Amino acid sequence: MLPLIARVAAVAALAACCLAAPALANDMAPDLLVKNVTLEVMDIIRSDKDIQAGERKKVISLIEAKVLPHFNFNAMTAGAVARHWEKATPEQRARLIEEFRTLLVRTYASSIAAYKDQKFDFRPLRAKPTDTDLTVTVRVMQSGAQPVQLEYDMEKRPGGWKVWDVRVAGISLVANYRTEFDNQVREAGIEGLIKTLRTKNQSLERATVAGAERK
Amino acid sequence: MLAALIALCAGCATNGGGDPRDPAEGFNRAMYAFNEGFDRAIGKPVATAYRDVLPDPVRDVVRNFFANIADLFIGVNNLLQGKPLDAATDWTRFAINTLLGVFGIFDFASEMGLEKHDEDFGQTFGRWGLPDGAYLVWPFVGSSSVRDTAGLILDFNLDPVVAHRPKGVRSFMVVTRALGKRADLLDAGRILEEAALDKYVFQRDAYLQRRRNQVYDGAPPRAESEAPREVSAQRGVPHSALRLIEEPAFHDAATASPHGG
Image (cartoon, rainbow over all chains, first blue to last red; front, side, top):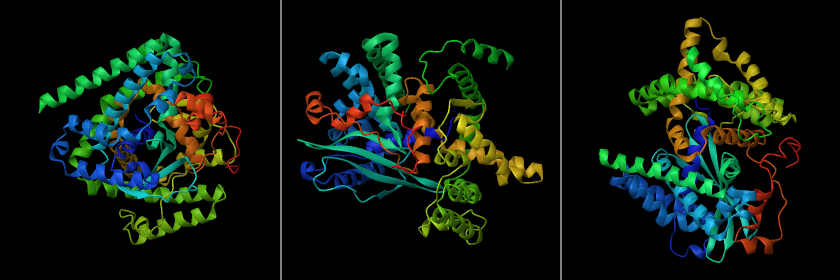
């Protein structure tokens, strides 16, 4: 039986779906950025007929176009690989980032449909104007349950504000992958971790294709 | 059934990671596998049928009804945690939803801005300074810890639904409540399936992170051991991400004071 925690893991996926790329994202305040793109992406999800019909490929390309530009996958991957990051060659790092990004995008894509009817409460930013590293908080309202808090840890970078971790009800995505990645590396090295991620992504890819063919 | 249990226990001995937070990993993995088997055979199919048969508003009514009953002891726990204002909110919610919301089937209190809280005795013990203790997985219950198991025993013994008589009605309510909870987690379960490399580890770490967050009511103290900025700039990693690299996720959970952050 699944503990309640699973619901939280699912909303995690939603968190990342909620960031998309409007024009002039560079100078936009981080809380405004999160709000605008959350509403924009949810609007598309709710109105697009193909997505409503379960077209996973289209959700994935929506995320890639709107959401990915606002994530610092380099930092997320480094945070998840943690102490082994130092040992990885630049080439291995590039592959790790690529595979981790693919996995997260797929997870987001499958959660977005499940959470499209939720209401959001965008919390006021608690930061000084000079801060370059802060947290944007959004709450997902639910009936008969405490709201789920989404926290985007963001850093100001040359290309605008970038997310380097998402916490859902206090569960950090990056921290949650750290033990899993650590176990993989200790068993089979960095190459073993890359291979496991690739195998996982390939099986999800096959499931997506099979799902599309069934229709 | 017996054969399945024996097969499970064959796996007990293989203990991969040796995580200090999870000394009973062999036992836990066996329990986890048992729960998975039960869920695959009964929990998930029945919850899926429940979701497919009943429309959303009906399931909202069921969820609200049990959520309203829960507000009573959520208030008690808030009081025990030294948060009388939150406790007052919980009991006001209970009064409004019971009277105006027809025995709690409508959550008018939330619409009036009285926000629902989430408390239990495990969190109260945490607030009092008790560390998690070892991570534990129990049959049918799922993820827990030594501290949360103690809390759960109290939760269960004081649960108005469990205390309800006649027993027939009690059993019906307990099953319905569990079914509703499981149905609410169907999407989440599918996503967990996709996201995790090792579901057991993923779920364990998420549980421990989430409980810590709950104990601190969503604002746990953060470990601040930030590396100099130029180091992180070289790596192309935010300096604050480095604390994720250097710090074990939960090391400070046991030592930090709940009121310190």
